[in-house]
Image 1 (cartoon, one colour):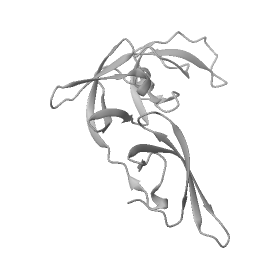
Image 2: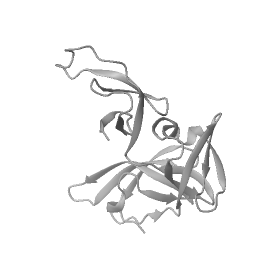
Image 3: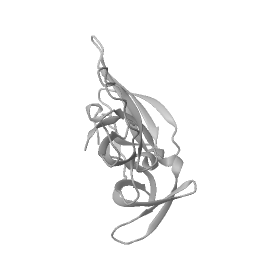
Image 4: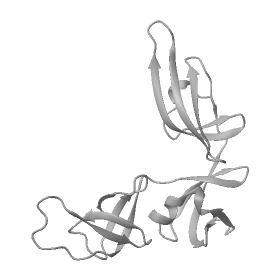
Length: 185
């Protein structure tokens, strides 16, 4: 059982036998009263957002979600195909469940899937990922005084703003939450 101090961002909790992920957390301490925690949670099955308030002595049930490594194989129309590396079984999920996978992960990447009752309901994605630049237009000489950027194309086909010194073939780190360039890999 979790106490209210365990409810941090990305914690998985169970509300009415449904897994939820904490997306926002704020702790409030009243003068004479007890502390309360206000959390925003996202239903991992339907995507619905809820706001919950817990009192100081509340006990919260952790979600019973299984974590397994799955290899991203390819995109098939609007579906993504994953394989379990140990059993070679394939799973197909809707791209809408995790649209950032297509943008920031190349085919063949291994990701940690969240399974509820044997079905993939989401992913625990790393905060950043290294990708190869496939296209980076040349930069104008002398145009680097103001920290200028240019649009580059990653191996996944996604476009990102990056500094002028990035060339085709470079490996760059991309933040998978916001989609911004971080650094050379």
